[in-house]
Length: 278
Image (cartoon, rainbow, N blue to C red; front, side, top):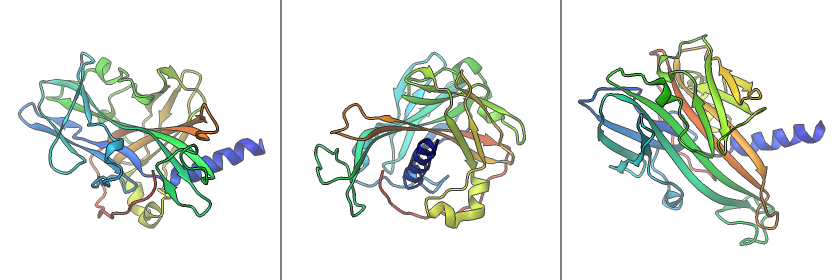
């Protein structure tokens, strides 16, 4: 029991220090308008920021998945986190983000580098991180639940089992967590909203983002999110496993997010820029 609790605490500490990946995209769009979206990599939810030059290679372009399940890469336009997909036909779409598997090792002095233990013998710990994000875009009000709930193949994926854009405060919102395409049972799923984070910005900027929901998945990998207030909600799950070769790295970690816009209230937050490991 003590060992598992310690593992959870260590896991939480590691996660708390890291940047996260999520997708900023309009929940509703007209077919007359152009879809612009942001690949957000930050700890300053909901603000995206320019991705540091030494991290740019970790990311692939945002993807757009249509109702038929066809996925295409979006085009970068503007800063290195800004993408466009032009005008879209009526329907439901998924915008996806991916941070490729990347080694991060730390030495005794606490310095992080993008290297494995094999490449950096003096390192005391190593994690291979991969991150994913999703946001749902409904064009011309055409809600297609089959399209919204179809997995797009992320290693760790949060699948909405209802339309996220219709989620209401104090009403359950069902999701399913998949790891390598299979339901992940017993996973801890957390969530917070911009309207919650703004109440304790000091914590958010100290890598202690306030969470407003925590629940565990059942045997089918399902859990009901309970968003108690209006706001832009970010649902998050983390799954860690031992890395295949302990001489190369200690553990493999996958992080995934889903954006759920609840009601119309949004926080009035100022962006703060800060860079950290991961």
